[in-house]
Amino acid sequence: MNSETALDRATPGLQREPFIWPVRVYYEDTDAGGVVYYANYLKFVERARTEWLRAEGFEQTDLAKAHRVAFVVRSAAIDYLKPARFNDSLQVTVELIKVGAGHIDLFQRVIREDELLASATIKVACVGLVTMRPVRIPQILATRIRTRI
Image 1 (cartoon, rainbow, N blue to C red):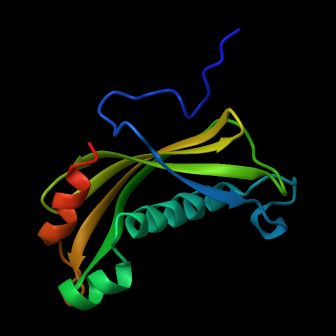
Image 2: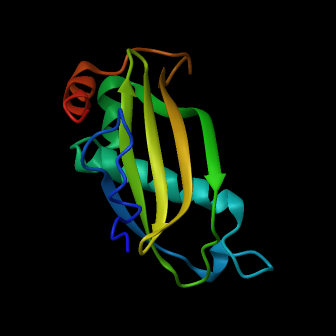
């Protein structure tokens, strides 16, 4: 019997310890079939990324105020493997793949107990608030998160 869980499976190039954020599935997250509506997985991974940044010591509101930048999703690829249902307790992970000059590549998983329900590769771009055009990630943030790879 294999005791490996979805959280134990390492993916080459990712940080060793994933950030984990708990999520509870509410009735409003489900569709007529009683399962989590597909677009809501994107909300779950978005919340986990926000909490990951917060755990690293960076509030998005502070980045906007002090550095005049925001992060926007440039691309998202998500694989749906198994359904989540009302009242499920989930874990959403954030794993850093790469920090570029103006973007961050991440791998995220949505897990119920030891079952992988969905996985996503997300690229976020750093943009200037005034122009909404790509800019460099503030050095203090880039330096901090690069140590996680």
